[in-house]
Length: 561
Image (cartoon, rainbow, N blue to C red; front, side, top):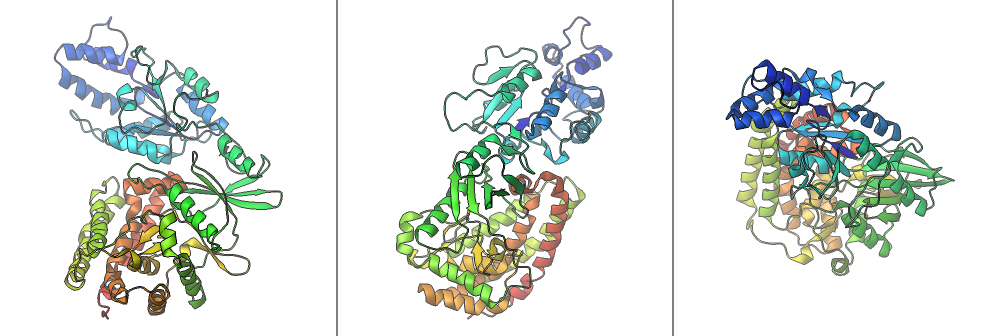
């Protein structure tokens, strides 16, 4: 993915700023036609506020008059023809700091529309691949969220930010302002950038810098040359058919077919707000399972750490539908957990990491859910749907959480007491029938272990019964919990703790349903499913969260053992 800045990178404002300044009588006619010269002239004249107001005016009311840099549109068309994915990521405030209250985001999108960026007969850029962020840090985070392997920007100070990802950085310098800049590749025009990216040289320095190879049409989906090489190493040549698989919420998943062989290729998402190594966690978990002869998963066929790729045998069954979960399926799930934990001391020597959001005390459970609820306070009210979600959080979800939290605090006991290691379990974490497929013999194969690690068994129980995609009927609760306790010799108080925590986990899952509204989590969905359907996903998830919260009151009335 090639990320590209918007202002002063795609859009050239030099002539427009010069024209507006001349209209207002602010600059002499012989001043060079250059935005930087206009700005510097006004600053030297002590007219900083006028310059600030003028920026809002140009980026808003006069935006339609701006021109793209020569070669910029050709660059986008060339990327489309070569199958190279691109996105636009800009730092742009919603409204000017001074002057009339123009909607700068709307003006920018209208300019893109006017230039044919969204026209499938011209550039054909997906509207969901245009990100206008409110802060510089949000822009940097978005660059990582989108999986950019190169980024093009006109500001060397942004590219030099300590938090900027370790990717190839290209400084666009059409006015030759940064001749002394040596830290980044510096390009004076778009033709030069295309020539560099179309024929990339091997990067100097660290071999860990990911350089995107051009994508070429391959089967039914464009696949990078590097990914093709990985597939070829495992027997899938260039004639393999590769098609995207639906359903992944965090990663990109593809089916690979060639010469009677069938496999699944998985590309793992990574983001700075979630430092967990999803690829590393899943690889370690699979290696442990298969070294111990546990065969209730697809077979891992290969790994590529640089590209964060995993290759697995293909399981062709359909996931269980809601309402189809019966005692046989629940027993197979429990058998998997028991097999996984039969040698916990040995497992601890091979898998050391805790599960994602692991909790080993009552206080940790409360803190984790506190954090999830608090994150929803930061939803940006950009659309009516966002505002509806904010109202639901404040009027419904937060009061329900306070009630459930108070009940747990009154009945839990010592919230700070840490769980002893023998009472923790090795958990797949995101465990349920949404991550299970039946093989041709009807035996369930469990998938997706990027969150796996050590955790409180009460959390495993509650998550298993709370996950909403393929719900597990509550009638199986007692049998599941009792068999887990007896099969792993866990303390009997686990049954009471799990019942006490269950309403809290229902609220946690309501928060998870609203992840579409949270910046970092939404990016994973955009990475996996594309940003074009984000509005539809938001509406659907808000409906689900509203419905799920209605059951919390009922859960809170369960009597405790």
